[in-house]
Length: 397
Ligand SMILES: Cc1cc2nc3c(=O)[nH]c(=O)nc-3n(C[C@H](O)[C@H](O)[C@H](O)COP(=O)(O)OP(=O)(O)OC[C@H]3O[C@@H](n4cnc5c(N)ncnc54)[C@H](O)[C@@H]3O)c2cc1C
Image (cartoon, rainbow, N blue to C red; front, side, top):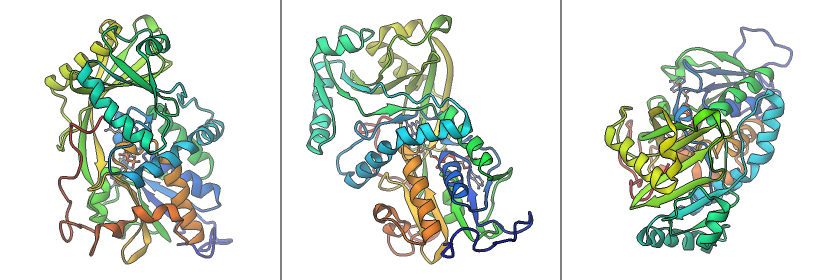
């Protein structure tokens, strides 16, 4: 930690060949946001990545959904998601200003819907849990639902509004973060880091998504997600403005409309490491999407893609110093939530670097929570941990 404060290594030594204060491994949203925040605090920062923005964020839908993503038994994660989502409006405004870019940030809210009576019963079970946590989920009558979103199929039995669940376009977010970081003085180095011993800096932050496991031994594993991108015909905006998350005949699907005409349809959740797209997944996603919003059958199918989420055994990110390595900080394992968690991760890690003091919000997420000899835990030393608590039945993105 830079307990001496910014430029404790440098002072007047601003020459180009000095080790930086902070080296960040990974130029996804998490690494770039940390780099931007650290540079704004006066630190010299270098980011290493062979292909910035090419990780999970390139595939991600960009839902900022702490409410819809509040699942049974994940209280601490829900609290972190909620705290980070609350920072998003100011973060988006500041980043748009610093980069001059449009992030595609939208605050139209999220509709949670059930197609059949069984789907609705399933959805209501989760809403009851979320409401029990005090989260804003407001049940809507079918007429209210259709008033809000006339594009919904008449068959949709019912739904609810999560007004505070917003969205951003990750393909706009990452370049904007890169621009803001570079304008703040961050240097990007094009190249993969093979070993942390190759990195010279006072503090190294490992923000390499799925690549964090090989560098640190932490239990981060790839969780495959297939998504589709549709486009409204004739350059029009989609015929609906809310994010729609639904159960359709037992299939989970989400639809994320962008102002530029794109609709992201997602996603599978698979314990696999390949990135092939399967015909069956495309079929199921499209069928569920069209069941909920019939006009989507007229849209262009412009992209099918699979990405790898950086999953962890408890679905929560890993934030803080590696056991016995106070100079190496993990900012990894953001799984389904790396976009929504970008602002709070950047703030918490930057504060830790600058002050040397871990903020109280970090405590549940530090690497040592996986037990003795954390790298490789809980499966033992040195390797990835397979499996986890994610199941297709429970998860949407
Ligand atoms: C289908 C799908 C849908 C998703 N939807 C959402 C959503 O709606 N909302 C949400 O919040 N999250 C969502 N996510 C999750 C989100 O994309 C990730 O949590 C997030 O991208 C993690 O950010 P990151 O910067 O840690 O990692 P990444 O985005 O994966 O970036 C990691 C970067 O590190 C680099 N790297 C890797 N290894 C090395 C190395 N050895 N040296 C140098 N650089 C390296 C890579 O090139 C890459 O640029 C989704 C993910 C998927 C796959």
